[in-house]
Image 1 (cartoon, rainbow, N blue to C red):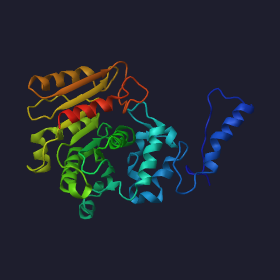
Image 2: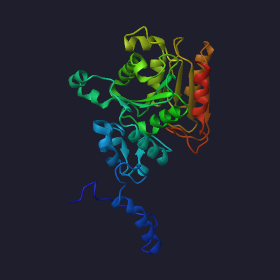
Image 3: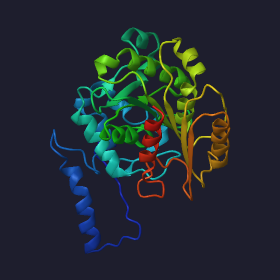
Image 4: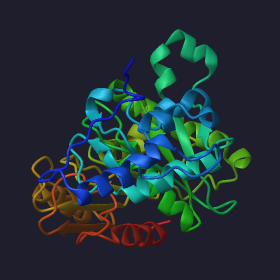
Length: 324
């Protein structure tokens, strides 16, 4: 019986019934017949379903990719596509999956108790993926976008968190419920703050990162008034910096955090002019800002590897450090 697990159809555009096509077919097909042994690394040709169902990930492997399968496509890590996103780097996808497996025993954190998840089963679709940096270093919470319809973490928050951890920072990528995104981010910040010693992170000087819908989340929870309202706490410090990518969020408040923003000039979803005007408004009331518009880039460029935006994360980290 053929199923998505044992059947795969591929067609090469412009291919011929000749020797070269056969060689290419065999080269690409062999990994499906002879997959890596248990304990070996995931590769570009590893099936996404095999990653999600890997025993090392227990019951949270399904959260590595969007819970709503209608927003992503592809059979292998190399073929992954996410709605509204561009420049997905398959090598980064593979690196992330291997990182998660190598740290499977400590990388995933529940932000809700079992009792809370029993009362609301949708809370089972939440959690923090922890990319560890140096002990005692500040932390960042990275929030992927997805138009509040799904969470595109594999391109819009996991890569950011991984790169931040390489720089020594402790980074968390939040998997949230799209309908309760702000509530889940508030809970995540509260969880990290309350468990800072246990997690080995500094409870002060943190930053909030996000792209698209995730950038709106970062901006809202970066506002001191909203932070207190949504967490119900007055002891949790405000984020020292908010790092935003490609979103049309336009509210300006004296309670907003220092804000770094970047976007592409060909973004058909989030206007670079809207983002620029907001930062000009923040700057006008004395809040530190930095803005970058990358010529020709569309929405959802992530780390921007191989584009004119490559290296923007380093600039954002510098901005964060200057405002800690």
